[in-house]
Amino acid sequence: MAGSNPNAKPMNLTLKVWRQKNRQTQGNIVDYQVRDISPDMSFLEMLDVLNEDLLRKGEEPVAFDHDCREGICGSCNLFINGRAHGPEPGTTTCQLHMRKFSDGDTITIEPWRAEAFPVNKDLSVDRSAFDRIIQAGGYVSVNTGGVPDANEIPIPKSIADQAFDAATCIGCGACVAACKNASAMLFVSAKVSQLALLPQGQVERKTRVENMIAQMDKEGFGACTNIGSCAAECPVGISLENIAILNREFLAAKATSNNLA
Amino acid sequence: MSWLSNALTSSIGRKIIMAVTGLFLCSFLVVHLVGNLQLFKNDGGAAFNIYSHFMGTNPIIRTLEIVLLLGFAFHIYEAVALTGKNRAARGSQGYVVNHIEQNSPWQSRNMGLLGTVILIFLLVHLYNFFYRARFGELDPDINNNADLYTLVVSSFHQWWYVLLYVLAQVALCYHLIHGFKSAFQSLGLTHRKYTPFVTYLGYAFSVLVCAGFAAMPLYFFFLQ
Ligand code: HEM
Ligand code: SF4
Ligand code: FES
Image: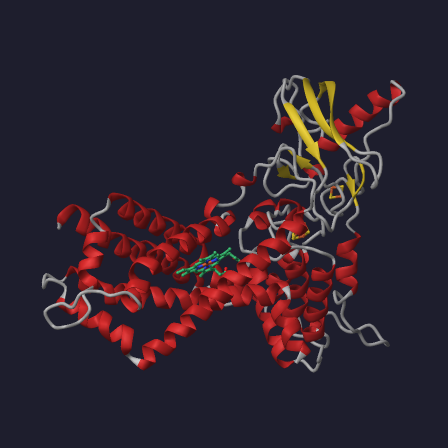
């Protein structure tokens, strides 16, 4: 493989993995050994090796979520050794490499924990609460008709950059998983500030923030107390500044919108 | 007015009440500290007793006293409400291994604990000084003002009392190191030009105010 280290020695590891049959049953930690893990493997490839072993032995493989395996879809959510997406900052689990671990290590792997993210099976959780928050307001109205010119609406570069930074949120839920309060504020703030900053987001601006916060509360996420674990664990570096923007959007909307509920 | 009650009971609304009451309590701390600096005046407590007589009888101050009580009541009520909501949100099954200390400061995660230490201190403090000055019988001083000064001095000669005060000020200091800048964040008052200053001011405020309060029992215990 290009860029691989020919001197890297394969590793043997002990895994402590959360196993749970389904939503109704209780789960527990089960120990497994994996052998000859290349330091160049991703964390998910290491789990693939475990699952192939399990299949060969006729055991049920470990369920975990993944899709793109290139850090953009936000599905690969694992709580590794007490950290969301593992020890490496700014990295999704699929982009975490086994070279961050050492031969003989014990690695504890758990699903995201939050009342609003129930465990479906093993390490796979239901994050549809995020989808419902987006449905409540994370969209913009567009005109039908011809395709508009790319640069028709002037947007200052600094605003465009700020909105783009917020738009990089991949909806993984690490912010919720890491937060002492299981708060979804970093996620919601990324969506709200991205759209509030741009001219295209103005039509629904007030209703959006009111509805998204109402849905966030209804889903049972906690309230932000500005601890900062979310931003520290976010794989794409969404900043706490977005939460301040969300708070002022919410205050302004509640004070001035036409919605009486 | 359902929009208003909905707004104030939403997770952001509760945070906003925390922030407004928290900053209001900070303003109280400044007034309380500045007034009490008269304890350091070497006049056998005359100035301090005049001041405390004024604070106990002036109608404006007496009205603000009720506002202050409400400020504490709302702050504590929202703290309890938020803590309950957030515990429920975290869920019953916790992590087997969680290294939250690697991603956040201790004081930010323990505002409830710090607040409880402050509350216990407040109750002792209010009983000993406020209650006894307002409802108890203190002897008159040379100017015929109730002699709160002598009570303060004798209290600050008891080691356990001094220890409680100093510990409470350490707790308050950590509460404010998180709380001061957090309140600005909760209110959405952030800006790349001013937030670095607010952060710096928060540290300076927390340390100076708490050191000022802690200096009083220490001064009387060790130097008087
Ligand atoms: C003089 C006394 C006090 C002052 C000056 C003070 C100040 C503050 C400030 C400025 C905040 C930050 C608000 C925010 O983040 O928006 C805060 C948060 C908090 N306070 Fe206090 N406080 C005091 C007493 C108390 C007491 C007695 C309790 C509890 C019994 C308490 C419990 C809390 C809790 C739990 C938080 C965190 C809640 C959150 O961030 O959402 N505080 N306080
Ligand atoms: S804010 Fe960061 S941690 Fe939260 S969902 Fe978006 S990308 Fe994931
Ligand atoms: S699998 Fe898509 S981000 Fe990791």
